[in-house]
Image (cartoon, rainbow, N blue to C red; front, side, top):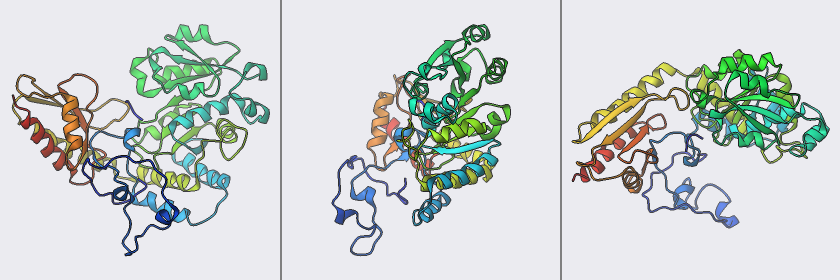
Length: 411
């Protein structure tokens, strides 16, 4: 797990609640108020577990919570009919201005943005090519190869494969020069794995320009800093894909594709509501488009220095509380690219504290309130946590619960 509520005012529930997938009768879902007039809490009604999120913006954990401004945009637009293409036109124009791009569109997440952006490169605005994807690209005169550094294969390249392309692995600039041919469509860069490759983003872009190819980049979870929203557009990347439901706190199912005008135009034609396209099922409703715009506007204009100071204070509080425990050591770091926020790693001496990271994670999960931390992977005697998804005051609860669970495990 590397990266990747509509319901307001969720009540924290004990672990006894379970995830339920069922079809409710019409009389149950008709309206959002009970017979007594009180506002319904469907999360509680269905017995769905809620938790304090000290792990981060993981997709499976529902990523982030939307701000009131985003919910207002969703609520207001849900009461009116609009033409989806017009909403996308207006929202895309505003977003493009905000992120220094020639064009932009709201997508069904960052993964969708990658697929649609790649489709835009392959087909342009040619309706016959659009119908052909993802089959027999070369038979239709469509370029079919994309270059990607070996260190950037991380699973997310599947979004490009979905268009029918073949991905060619390279490591060095010489590899790029040898690999480029008449079938090469573009050169893709996974920003969170920048340090795993031998070619950095600026050199990658220059190599693409040398061969007259578009360079594209995935920055799904790579804000903060806020400047990354326009950095890669300013550099000249053909398209940039980002998640909308992580640090930006827009709808979780939304993302943004931004970049060159011709690529965005092609991507739009490959997308819903257009039929006979690979993007027909990547539908984004008007509420998500406007909610994404509201979230981006709020995110860009908020006080980022103040927010960072708050993160430092809250993670410092947890650190000070936990490091007092016998046998425990702590370290605060900041990941260099993706999820670039303060992260606390808590490690314990197994000769003093008899527990594993999985067991500690389970105990925190089963508590009341339930808490999620990063309790997977190695080593077995540590957990990690972040604070940027915590609600006000929750850092105190997290600190206390970790203290309790580690103290209970003394040998």
